[in-house]
Length: 381
Image (tube, rainbow, N blue to C red; front, side):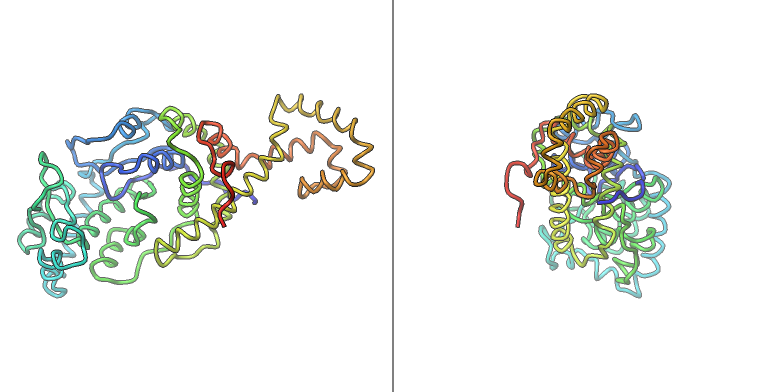
């Protein structure tokens, strides 16, 4: 697998929740990004579990906390919500929004918990937007609020998605963040180029937005590899933080993974994307395993010592190698190397080290108590 172009080292924005619901997803994502920010209302007191709370106090790359927050009163979100309000005003009559997004429509729809299925903190809406929605019966007090010490409003799930996606896209564009979710591939509405694209897609039901970039698809693949192939329960917060700081190794791996996804177009749904990631993950792990097995015997000492050691080995085995069978076996284990290169040990060592470099991050991960399933069980069919 050839290395691709260098990737941008940027943070991630968690969507659509405040609290992370899966500790292993959080660990895997923090192995892929320098930090994750959450959309949190000003003054809102989070109720994190032990793992998330630890990451919120631990520094990774860029000298900032690995789990951070973005204020929903940010000028970028306030501007986006004001534009959303104007569009809703324009469409409320023509598109019968008060009927489509009413309490009864949510109750009659295929949503778990019906009229209380989608609840939004008042600060994620903004005062003017709340007033408009309540006036037209598109926001109501939920029967069972998410938390008693905060003010929540229930809305129709499609409208809720529109509001949350508008906030997320605005923050992501303003601060160059990649939107991530623990619920599968990115919601289609988040592919809009801006908040207007989100609205057109969800409310006006127009086909818009854009296909995700290769970098974003590569990040999906990396997280899938980490989650599906490593025992993340064995990794502590400190282990994750140490690996998080290996920027060069991570960039090399991400660049290599781009080649696995650059031919993948838009996916019709998350199940298909999951299947594609499963196949590509198997390819990645097999190539990493092949390169690691070639180099495992030469992982001791520095390059100068290895070169000397290998020269001595070659002097002992050279007659047998030249004789025939062993040459084929050795060269067969080192694809792309001619017989003459075997004896140019300095050149050979450089080629081996370069071959291993894109997968050094996975090897470090495997050594950090996260035993790879690749070495524990047969590869899936």
